[in-house]
Structures are given as structure tokens and as C-alpha cells.
Length: 82
Image (cartoon, rainbow, N blue to C red; front, side, top):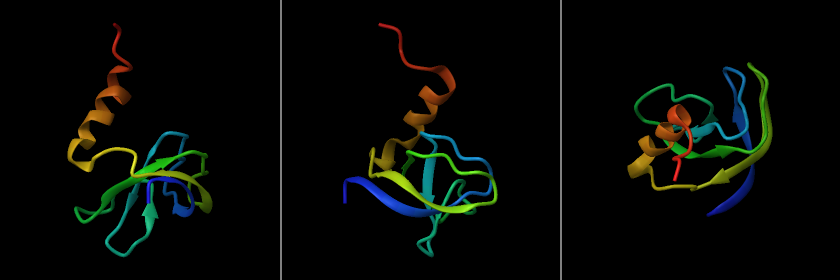
């Protein structure tokens, strides 16, 4: 299932490229987890306007969900400087 897929995603707020896409226990792809039963599904490769449901490209299974917090580190602090 690794790869880029065209998926229907529900956006409550504006989604940007690179934003995490979550999957609910009902199998719905959303921009923000509505409850503790959601899991990271992938990330958006196309933007979506707030309140829209669109079919977009999603990079699926992009990293181990056991280290999901790692992605937020780079979101907040940027790429490491070597």
C-alpha cells in the first residue's frame, strides 16, 4: 500500500501540501483527528480549501506511526542544520 494514491479527503480547515492526513475508525480521511481512534494515513500532496471534500493525491504510509511526533519536530523547528 506504499505509494501515492488519489483519495477523497474531508478538510475542516484549509489544508496545505505536506499536511498530515488522518484516517478515522470509519475509514474517512480527514485533516485533523476528531477523536483518539484516528491514525496517521499519509500526507497531502495537494491543497484543499476549508469545508471542502475533494479527491487529492495522498502519499500513503510515509513513516512509522510509532514515531509520528518526529514529523511535528521538523514542522515546528525546521530541518536540522549539519
